[in-house]
Image 1 (spheres, rainbow, N blue to C red):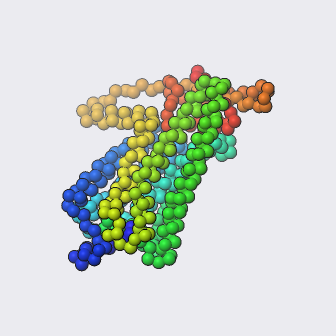
Image 2 (cartoon, rainbow, N blue to C red):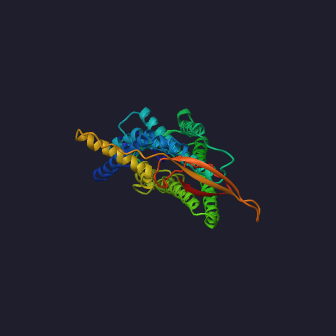
Image 3 (spheres, helix red, strand yellow):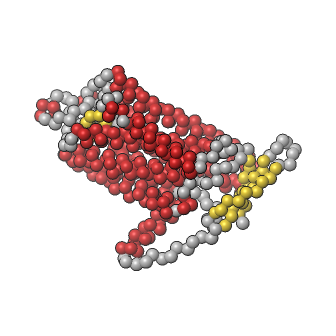
Length: 386
């Protein structure tokens, strides 16, 4: 998290020197209420998503693990970072110690990096599933390694100010502690390095991955449409997956765009008073809002999450009435057969390979995440349900 002109001294002299902003009581009340709503939604939605994935054995796949990692990061920023801003918002000044300010600044940067790195590895996983399905399979073990790498890299990037590379201070315009405006060449290098690694490079990776994914899905959809009907459902599913991940990425960019705008202005100004009034709080609150909207997107776009929500809410409802919830019928396990037709040269008979994947859904499962990521890049899939 980046701040501009920082001062933890709340004395009258400091408030009059042009480097300190104190919001009006009515403004502080609106900020506090909106942040409380964001926190409640983020806690409830992210906790529910984690429980749904944990309870459903069919969701123990790399893609759902990445979603759970994203939910853990959003829950972390809600429980460990937002309370600092809420207390400061209510008191309208920083009333905690400098060590807590350092902790607040570290947590803000850390969870921001966790979110964007997790979105990056999700795009990489989807890229290998669709564009390079035969080159490398992302197994559950590799998924854990990727998640661990994202969290470790986030820690290394965020710990810089704690070891003298940059510094965390309180910003009265954002009501939060964060990386302060650079005072030396070394601190400017840290700021540029942080933006480059945690924003520019990650967005370039995701942009390349999703462009290749969209082109591949379009090419395969056109080819499958000429030969099969069932296989078209597979490509529609993959297209739905891609659009969902793109939606998550788009929302992330929109929520953090005010924050990026704040960084740009901070590099051109030397005082909080020179920044647009309220931009600091708006930038941070929009970033916090992203933690509450991410799980909602997955619920809206994913049948399994919606079903998991219904089960949990049903258990809570009957539990409040001291009743036993009705027994949910367990769907019968069946096999879904995929017929691979590997086309050779023109005029040659296509080679056929039949593969079976277990499925518990009585109908074609149009969900967010497909676990069938090992299709041949040049193959044509025909869905045959038995």
